[in-house]
Length: 83
Picture 1 (spheres, rainbow, N blue to C red):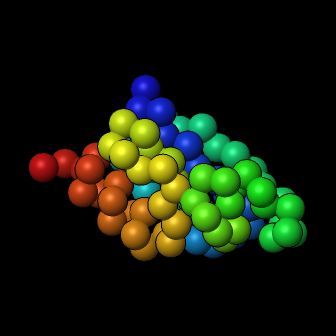
Picture 2: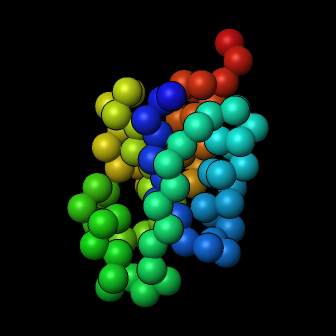
């Protein structure tokens, strides 16, 4: 278990991109579904300093709240992909 957490919103294509990469890499993760209303995303803001999704938390690798799907996918490939 890696301790990875992912904050998502249903139907978000950027979130789905990250979820596909996590599944492709066979990584277990805890998913947190957040409100569609940005002003109700306090839990996302608490970990990342902003209210957009997706947000990745990976304490094993010092990631406390990475945003931007492209950055997350790149991190996952670099950290967990085949060498």
